Amino acid sequence: MARQKLSSAHRLKRMNAESLSAPQSREQPRAMVDCGWGRLIFAQTFESDADLPEVLRGESAESRDIAFYVRDPQVAIARAPQEVFLDPSLTWRLDLATYRPARRARRGFHVRRLTSRTDAQAINAIYAEHAMVPVPEDYVWSRRDARTVTLLVAEDDQSGELIGTVMGVDHGRAFDDPARGASLWSLAVSARTGHPGVGEALVRRLAELFQTRGAAYMDLSVLHDNAPACALYEKLGFRRINVFTLKRRNVINQPLFIGELPETALNPYARIIVNEARRRGIGIEIIDAEGGIFRLTHGGRSVLCREALSELTSAVALSICDDKRVTRRVVARAGLRLPDALSEDSAMARRAFLAQHGSLVVKPARGEQGKGVAVGLTDPDAVEAAVEAARALCPEVIVETCFTGTDLRLVVIGDEVVAAAIRKPACVTGDGVTPLRALAEAQSRRRASATGGESRIPFDAETDRCIADQGLDWDSIPDSGREVALRRAANLHTGGTIVDVTDRLHPVLRDAALTAARAIGIPVTGIDLMVKDPSQSDYVFIEANERPGLANHEPRPTAERFVDLLFPLTVPATRKDRHDTDA
Image (cartoon, rainbow, N blue to C red; front, side, top):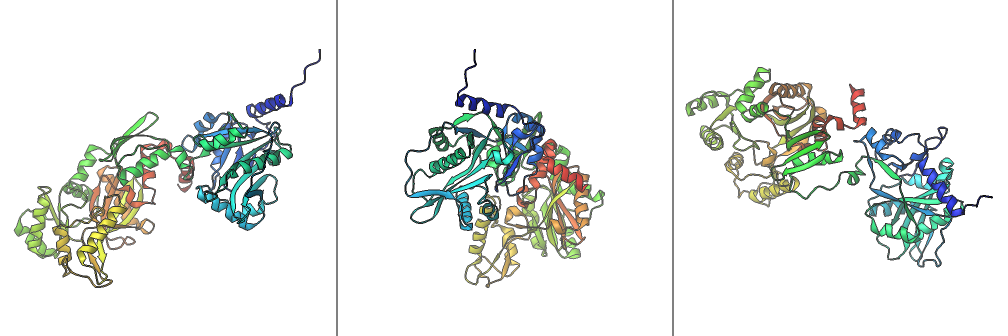
C-alpha cells in the first residue's frame, strides 16, 4: 500500500524540529552575522555548545553578541560560568507556510527599506529611546541593499519622521541554512509617535518579505517579562519553541544577569562590592545594611564582609591597624620611614618637642575617619587643647612631628597596589559676597550628596582653629577666588576630596605600601603616606586602614580586585589571560 503523503505543514514541522535537534555537519562553518549591534552567532552550526564561550570572548567593547539556537546551554555555561549567562528570553516562531497577511493596511504611516544616511541616524535615535545598543551609521548605510541583513523603517506620512524600525536576518544567505530559516531583531517603535500598530506593521512586512524569498519560518527572541510584545506575537500567529539564547556578561547585559538586590540602605563602600559580586553570579546575603555587613557565597565558599574588611583579615592584623602605636612599631621594624613621635606624656615634654620641631600632629591612638586628629599645631596651648580633645576619644594619644606635604592613600589588595590617590582637605573658594559659614555649609551638602552621606565637613574646634589660623572667622567674606582651607587633615569623611595619581606613582612609594601591608600581614588595606609629590620618593608613613573605602577610587578596579581575592575562581578568563601575558 502506498504511503500517505505528508501535509506541507507536517513536513515543515518535522523539518524545523530536525534543524533544532541535530547539529550541522562538521563541514558546515561556524556561522556568524555582523548585525551592527554585535554578532548573531548561530549555535546550531557549531559542533558543540561548549565552543560558544570561546567565540563570545571575541565580543567587542561596545557591542552585544548573541548566541542563538543554543541546544544545551548548561554545557556552555559549565565551560565559563563567570563569563556567559543564559539570557532570560523566550523564542517565538512564525511558520511562513501558514502565515496570512493582514486584511487591511495601516493608515498614517508606511513601511519601507532604509534609503539614506539620515535614516541611519534616525534608527539610532529610536534605539536610544529604548536604551538599545546603537548601530554604526556606516554599517547601516553599507547594508542598505544587502539581502543577508535587511533593515526596514516605518515613516510618518505627514511629517516624514521615522517612527519605527526592525532588522531581519536571512539564514539561507547567511550560511546556506538547510531549514530555510529567518529571524527578526531590534524591533523598536518611537515613544513619540501617536500611531497605533507600528510594531505589528513592521513585523508583518518583514514576514511577508521573507515569505516571498521562500523562507520556511521567522524566529525572534524577546524578554520573558515583555508581556505586550509576547501578546502581539501570539496574536500574529507566532508560537513558542524551546531553544535558548546565550550572551556574555558585560556592562550592556548587566541588568539581565545580576538579578534584583533587595532595597537596602547599603553605603557606597559596601554597595560597590555587592554590585561586583552580583555581576559574577556570587550569592549575596545582607546581614546588616546600616553597618555594611554582608555575606558572599559561591560554590562551597562563603565569606563574611564588612565593606572591604573580610574574614581573610586576621584578628591580629586588625588589632595592629587599630592601635596606631603598634602600627608604627611594626612598620618601623620593616624599614619604613616615620615621623618622629614623642614617648613621654606630659605638657612639659610636649612643649619641648614643639620647640624642637616647630609643628606637630596630635591624634588618638585608636580611632578612624579623622576624628580627633589635629594637624599643623604650632602653639603650645593649641597642642594641649588637641591632646584633651583626642583623649576624649581614646586615653592614649600620639604626638608626632608634622611632615609638610600631601596626604597619599594607596589601596593594597592581595600584594598589589590597585589605586593611589591624593586626598585634599576640605576647602572652599570665596566669591566676595557669601560668608564663610554659608560657603562651608553648601560644600558640606555637596560632599554628602556625592558620597551618599559619608562625607561631611565637621563644624568643630579643629575647623574653627583652621580658619582662625588664616585670619578668618565664620562671618568673614573671603575675597573672590581666595581658597580657604577648612581642615588640615585630608580625610574623606571630614569633607576631603580625592585625585587619582595611580599612573604617576613613584616605585618607592608603591614598595613602601606593599612592605607595610606585608609587615602587618593584612591582605586588604589603605596605606596612608605623607609625600612631597606622588611622583617623588620622599615620604613618611602615617597609618594603615583595615577597611579602606573602595568606592572612593572609581573607576580604578578596586572592587574587582577585592572580589578576585575572595573568589579567585570567578576571575574572567580574559583577565586571567591578560595577567598571564603581562607576567
